[in-house]
Image (cartoon, rainbow, N blue to C red; front, side, top):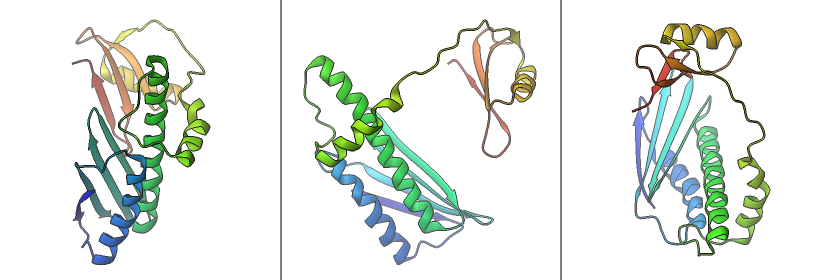
Length: 182
């Protein structure tokens, strides 16, 4: 794995660099062949929060995780856990498709311990509830008000300006985002 580690508002010391490389190198065991793509790691400090962002571009897949905590080393550990969960989840999805198609998985390595972990998390992909409702045409501001009234972190609506289905959501910074069909 090739690591590209950069710091924002923090100096990336040799100790931090070694820790990042040691921890994220553990991900290699999940892959059949060594990764040729760069692993992009951004370490930053904003106020008292230590933020770690990791992006791993793969063929037909982008792994990305972020964590914020009071300690940089615990943020790195949490990001590793999140990436491992993403890999196991994707591997479960791929294996399920391959069992149906009867072909062989080439991207992820077969590891007995990893397979056990995948089997344990296989239920995470099951749809446990489905809702159907009609979308009322409204503007973005009204959709945000509706979302806040019902106490959800997102709201699906028919945008009266564009006549398309849109989603408003509450961002981590407390502001709002809008997803529109493109």
